[in-house]
Length: 108
Image 1: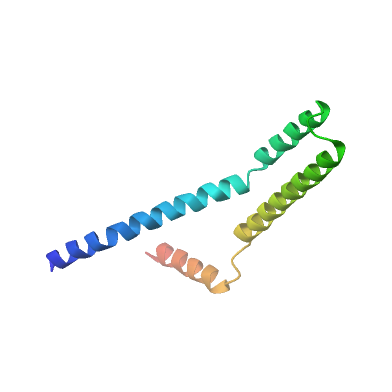
Image 2: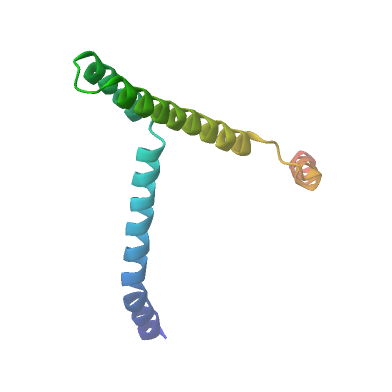
């Protein structure tokens, strides 16, 4: 029986490692995609490039609009996910169970 558990762990180990790596990659991509500071840095860099004449007005306006759109999308996404995480639990049975639990402790 113990030998079977060891074999299962050996077989599953590469999959768990692969899964861990995928989760880390997903976290890193999300962090970069949702980084407002990075977008603001690019906006500032674009402003400098425009002022120095590296970028013409048309290119500046096009890139600026894209970056501002991206910044709005990030803020909207973050506000939506914050609302989802902070919404109260709609299930009243949860509150009832907690109250019952409190009454049990008081009765002891």
